[in-house]
Length: 202
Image 1: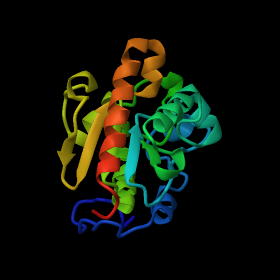
Image 2: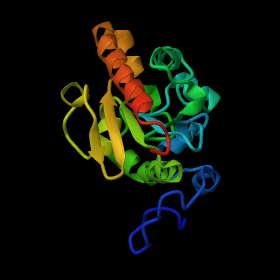
Image 3: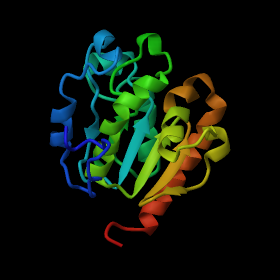
């Protein structure tokens, strides 16, 4: 458990641990009740050296069944928006605030987020991306440590420490609120333009 951010333990430096080491610590996690109701733990997937990490809220039904984030309708929508912005799914990393599906797709509870949060922090430290894209309110409020919602924060870059942060709507939300899709597309285009203007290593 030494890679976790725990009281009295030195704060890990960027890329001090690998994703494989973080995954090994997560194991068959049952630290909160979600571990008892899930089908599969959904750790994350993608490029371990990605410049962009996408953070969602938690796994849905399809993700829970397949053990991979963003594989349902929201995942297909995300893939299309990535392509429009000049990005490829294999170049990014995708994870969630909580690794197990909340029953009935309910919102994760604060105590569930608190237990699971160290795993996401270590994933981000391992990858050390340039940009974190927060999909939806829970990811945005967790990463930016704010009570404000996506509607107010989206459309511009924010910064927390080393990372630029792009808050935007969750692709699943645009299925029920199609009027949000143009805003999500605009945020993705903003991200693509920034990456093109700031090549890796600069």
